[in-house]
Length: 79
Image (cartoon, rainbow, N blue to C red; front, side, top):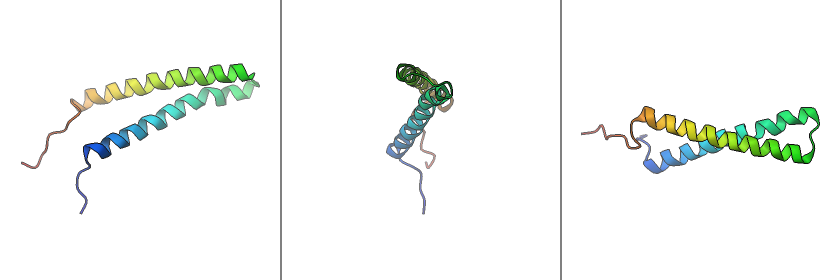
């Protein structure tokens, strides 16, 4: 029978989601800039800007998630 997920499993899942979001946002600007034949320096600048933007997005989404959840711990319903 399937039970509720543990805190460790939830934390691992959240880390994976954050990593995927960061990778998607960070790689988008360099891929878009490839349409305009960038120099290697411009490609690195696009990657750096995308990474910075990705970190901001992940930070904002995690903050927003904690506001909706109310707290990091859920109360046990089986009382």
